[in-house]
Length: 404
Image (cartoon, rainbow, N blue to C red; front, side):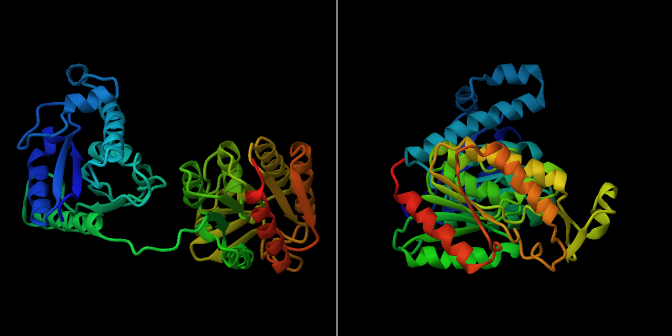
């Protein structure tokens, strides 16, 4: 397909021959190639279209100085910054339609920094020796596809030739794909956990009936970050942040934290938001034997074989309330908070394992300490009551329609 171009981005001083092989495979699939050199030394095997000097200059650096310094970490960081700017500008100018990179930890870091400049939906493929275990530093919250290289990326052999050929074919398919046209509807971002699913499902149905498209994010840390990245990027018309549980993991040290800035982006960029306290009764850990010893005598609930939940204490809930209140009080967007007085999750209602009126009261007390004049609705029902979901959905639609 004429006019479809893939940027091959990498360190051509160490991986030039492998990029030459990739280029030839992409050309076989009728894909044009633009070669971007993020190495520090002279390229081997290929002549780049964007030189290493241009990439370094985009970061305010100089390849000769980087090479002379001999600091690999500093070089990777600088070339990553430069690659970010180069790729961003190439996409903005319509010169590329996807990015394919190969590398070890250093090359993967450079490529990861670069592709994070691209919008969601633009193909981003990284063939890497570190594409296993914790890939979060490379993928982050965007749609990066990582493919394990199986063998080290060092020459073309019986294994690497197949892996790289597969990668080229995958990228060719991605840049050529045509997404079926769909009706353009305003997008709502909603957060959900298993223990708040009935609420989110009901609210989603309400909003879809009113002409919105609802994107649901699993509040597992990455989910909250992904939602807020789309908000920051201008994709989202309104946020229905029903499940703010990631704040509890951030406070207590659970495995599903979304960072200290969670619950601040919509308010900062001016996107209307309706927020609740879904699943702030719990902190997430792995299997029971992974729960830290200091929590072993606390109220624990085995949600499934891989997830163990810790009930937040009154002291923790007090601080969580303060944090939620302070974050919402600082919002510059239309904001409303809905408080379910009879339980913030399916397992904190009366008769369930996390029922704790003292902790719930502390959460509410903390909120009132910091929330200021933010609009608050305290409803005598639990978070999964249909009426609670209806009220939040209705108010969000009203806020979206109100002038900023």
